[in-house]
Amino acid sequence: MARYTKEHKQVTRQRIIEKAGHRFKQDGIDGSGISTLMSDAGLTNGAFYAHFASKDDLVAQVVADELRTQVASYGTLRPGRPGLEDLVREYLSPEHRDHPSEGCPSAALLDEIGRCGDGTKQAYTDGAREIVDEIAARLAPEDPQSARGKAIGLYTMMVGTLQLSRALSDGKFADEVLERGIENALAFMR
Image (cartoon, rainbow, N blue to C red; front, top):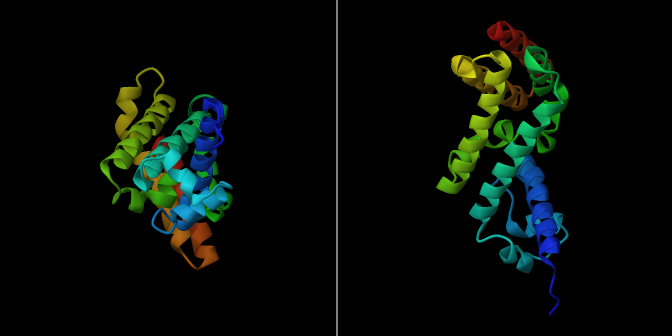
């Protein structure tokens, strides 16, 4: 039996997490079986348990990784409120709406995360706090705690707007929801 280095195992584990993140956001957590997830990663089903204790363990790891990546991407935005405005426009764009497997796990998976176990809910809670903290710091750099309520409101407004736009079959209406969502979010930030 071949033995792999610790680094090889970590690289493989990360590949599974990344591929599973795309699949979960595309097909849902419940719509993604282990065999499909492992096939996406170019591995056999048997390799799964060398990396994760269960599918629930994988889901929690994916949620944590997705949200860490999302928060890290905020570092590429312009500083302060201008960067937050850019984030709102990018988040509520037709491109983000039309490519859920590449986007925010909140808009794609929130309803399923609510039905997951404690490990996944804790991973989501930790990541959501980081996102809210980042938004609050951009709204009020001198006192982020004072902007926490507004940050929570803005975050929920963005996620809900994107989810609604994705659910609509009428493209013009879906675009209108995004456009109004941007206007409302920018007005809310003032």
